[in-house]
Image (cartoon, rainbow, N blue to C red; front, top):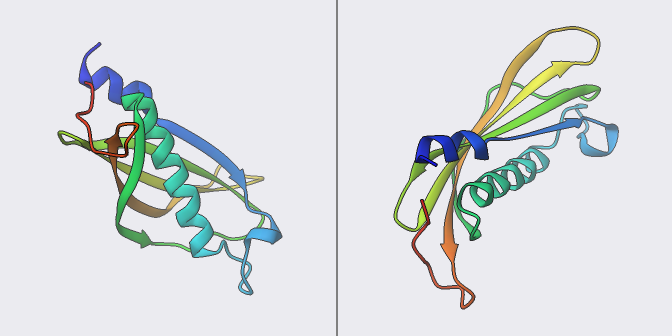
Length: 128
């Protein structure tokens, strides 16, 4: 399998409904909750790509372009954006979907870097 095929196969999608227990006093999704979901999707993407133990080492610039209202559906999409020797950078975008219409728009984007580790938590080369 080529690297491009592995990248395509590792793309990860997660759908969530934005319920009141995840919103703030403005009835929008907590930023920290969005970041947690993004890190989770990025971790799954990196792991599906490498099939190795992966740990988050950084999150790069997370842009909150639109608030995510309660009562909407969100889709998180993770895709490998860069491959290093021991690291993988994953881009995650969050899209807002209205529950009762076809309206959809990008709300949040960010990148997360992961390093492959061995059983002793030391960095190891990523299998391609």
